[in-house]
Length: 441
Image 1: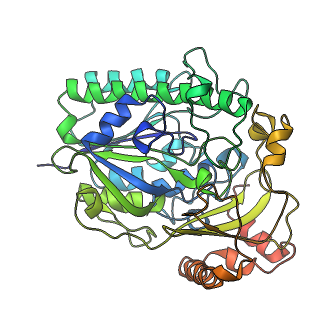
Image 2: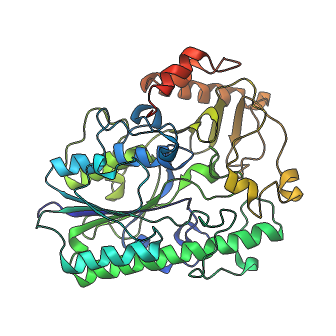
């Protein structure tokens, strides 16, 4: 059998809000895909916001390595020479490469290695999907296996009103039926916000259903590896833009009949940096030596794989410089800030202004602690919402030192400039210049 096609469907800001992850949201098509393939139950982004996370999906490297330490539209650029992205590498391996809809890894998508771009009027799922399904029915390229990157702007808050998710095409859930996770206050404003969000998730699910149906209609199901994921966590407080699980724990589904066993649920820790080596392992494409992730292809194929002991993620720039690093095991989460003092945590404008944001709702403001500190440690078994920092608890001193050591080893192994910033009260000029050099001027 020749190499399969690869379809990568990536949406915005979803986290793991899917029915197959236990959330009471209507996602019958993605749930069916999960039953037909593999679900990675403990999968994490490598960055706190869009471009850094997507850069890691595309390169198998951490943001400080691939260069996207901030957002593309704020001037950052993927280093395509040091870390050639997936479309470039697959094109060299004989694949045709197509982009449908959204990408946020480079200001020029062709620099990523896409042969053909298929833009929609807008990058909403219901406008991108028809273009892709029509392409599947009519052309499907030149006979070579294809990579199709399919990018949806959902479930990002609505561009015309960033404080909301609502579009006429969405059918909101009932506020009484949503799940309020432990890191969110259970108040009417949060429930209404979640209800609107569920409507956006449901539209994504419908469009994925159409893609899967078209693959079946065109006889491509058994010849195509389909991956569904998102860049990072959902756009709520204590989520997007943070290194808490609400910001970094994300959905990952993979389906390839006959290769990926149906109904496989993998509990091992996995990261976005692991996607490229995993996909290449399944496709039979060599993995470049510079890749920092590791393959979990054996786990996807139903073989025993204990996976990682830790996953790592980072935050650098978005609205301002806030260098932070995270290491997570199955049981514990350790977060370290690069600056000794931090007046306030990272909040992006859409969260400041949204109905469930602290600027519009004092109940939200009062729900979260005003304490600011350089180190955070959470016992995820006892505190899944990461609301009780136990870094100063003598009973967790051994664990704290273990997590510090794990992060230190990661910083050294990946030559992370964060290792030079942790003890600085302010960011030293020499470090600023070394980071700014990676920013497109």
